[in-house]
Length: 142
Image (tube, rainbow, N blue to C red):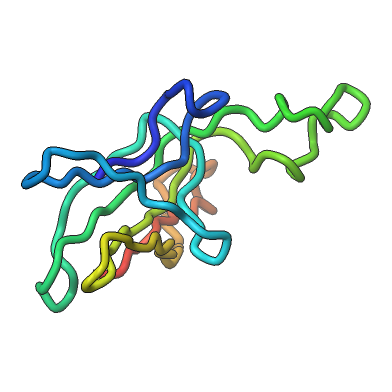
């Protein structure tokens, strides 16, 4: 399974999913429906293969990356301070986790966004300026 990339099929970075059949030596594009969203256009992300919770089939995990600036949308300008996200989602570095899981007895699959839980704790330092320091981290499900 591969995701995204830069191609002539897209205006810039792609948001497509492809599967390679080792027996037939053929690439197959996996169509996504509006009810089954994909991670969206991005680059410099990380992908690894894993196993499903029951261990029966492989999954692919996609984390983070960088999304191009939303300001390139036609509805953005200096007048609206480049603040519209109606066409493109907000750009910048991403901190999201997606899992791709193949459907059983099918050549298609689905992307699922996994949300982490933010956990914050006070960590006062030894200086007066650091007395109100709070450290936060995201805990991802196992």
